[in-house]
Length: 279
Image (tube, rainbow, N blue to C red):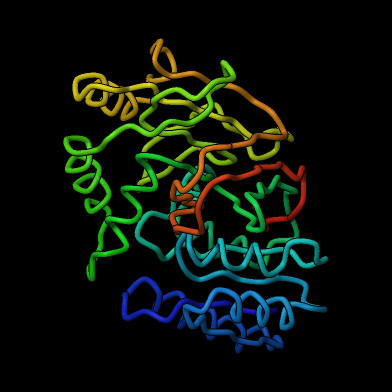
């Protein structure tokens, strides 16, 4: 077993680490540890190297750490297990597990094959976006201290000042929109159900285009999203596919809560590309 940890002074992270160490000692297991450094390329390379021949890679961290591990192990034979310890933990939310259940899943013999998305050269497991979501992620990353309310606060602040971007829509021509999300999972921004119909085992990705130009329509979209009712708005367009292209140039791309590059972008779905330990 390999355990990948994002170094943190957070109580949740340290408790997970202490618990895993105790379990390894009790079960007399062989375990390797890898602590992330913040250098994406080097971390992915090392995680991939250390994951060779492992049965399970345990991820202690949030969506960003999971993003790192997915890029390191996709294509390998190992499964991954998750101990959520981040600010948002959005990918983990769709499972509805308690802390105890996440811990039990590490040593479970059950697993589930899930889809993985890829945008340009980077894989993602939860979702990617351009426009407003990338703006919020960039705002969050500039804060030295973050919590779950940071996403809500950053979102509300940017709703007022945000300028729409032009992205080719499902209609086939560039049109102003608030944001475009391409989802494998259902949640982002610390629990907003932005893609309630997304299914990580469907073999497709769900694209949501938010054509909310005015402050009023943006606020309405945000409020309805709190209750997963925004898809019924005429300004929200949903499509499902295995392939998407974004031809606009120079827009930030966020994936799994990380700024990973700029458009243009080609997005693909890789069905059942990786296995997660479940109960």
